Length: 358
Image (cartoon, rainbow, N blue to C red; front, side, top):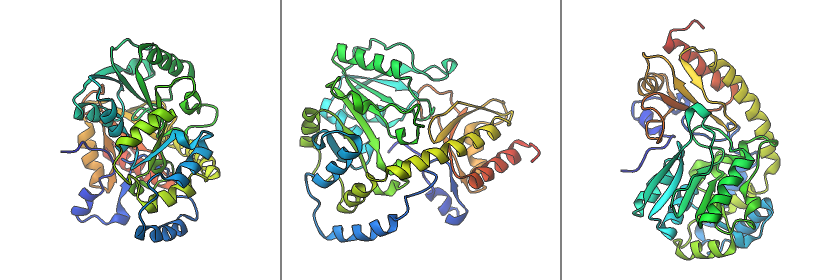
């Protein structure tokens, strides 16, 4: 049985709720949707379906490398970052892997799938879910997410660097998942891609499908040393990215202006949603630098699962967080930042459920 992520609108469709009536706050995608011109790229991509993709993905890697400012030999595309996470654990097969928790649950699943033991490195709620000093774990692999899912917190630059230095000293391969880095404002955004020369065991993950709101495309990539990219590519299944996705990825890699516009809009959308959520006495919200907000239910009446069910009856999905290591059971849920009118519908539903006047 696969672990559950967000985005399961199918359960509501089975209940007869129209797709037009569903608001999915359980998925953390760009609220602006795909960039203008996307439909034309999709139509062009259909022509790629009658051809095998380039097995080396030269054009796609070149486009990504140009956007990242690195060599194409340091880029490895994959069928989404989840696919690349499992590729990494299959390559290393760590006996012990450290994971900064709470975080994306796929890291733990991938480690255990390859026979490894997970060593949790807790990000404490009383510290705002920010990282403490780098631990000594005896692990061969470390996973951390920056900004972190589900907390939305960005790692302070000096603390992140401290952890990477510690990994380098201990001979640990460090994986920094930057799936949400495109949503972070310019003054806070520090990508570990710029440290690849300094840390030869460093691997950085990026998601194009989250940044551009095309999750069905399944497209991500990793950046690492040429040696690591070569070794991982050697065990990757043939044609991990379909031709249509590869063509779309080449186009998306050049949409930097759209990402800048998205960051400006998300900051405004997030601030407005945050301010209204803070007015609900039933909730405590974690400060976020990403495109989602982690909420804790403060009162004894409502649990996260009960709240999710009540919202689902109104055609609204949220992400309960019981499967995130380190979060109190049935207390936490995560909501995506969406457009203001959509956020307002969620807020009205929460006020109605909690019994607050409008």
